[in-house]
Length: 135
Image (cartoon, rainbow, N blue to C red):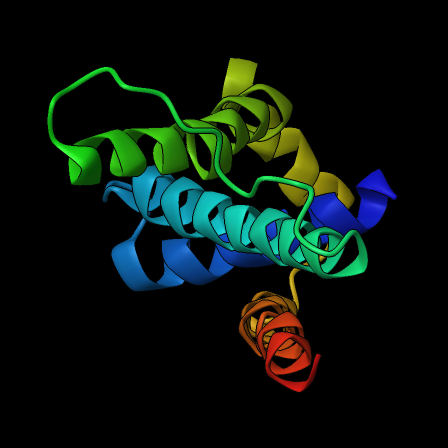
């Protein structure tokens, strides 16, 4: 399972390095979109779980940290769908320059695997939304 994860990462790193160069901000331009895509995958899973359980599972845990509801929702969403993936991705890919070993171990697909992951992730989130309309 991790080999697919690492192959997608190597492909994403290679694609961003080709765009930004070795000296650019390719790390940030790689970790942020990948973490967002993984958060979308979690959101899709929670949507499906919510449909199956008929609304018993909360999608975002609510808390009142600030007076503004929108700010509370934004922070809850970031804590649920973005920050955990940034931490996990950093530890698995970037910590101690591990991405260099991964690039040597796995071949890149000239951005095809990264693009397909993006398209599938965006395409799959439509499924629970359509199921919600039907049911």
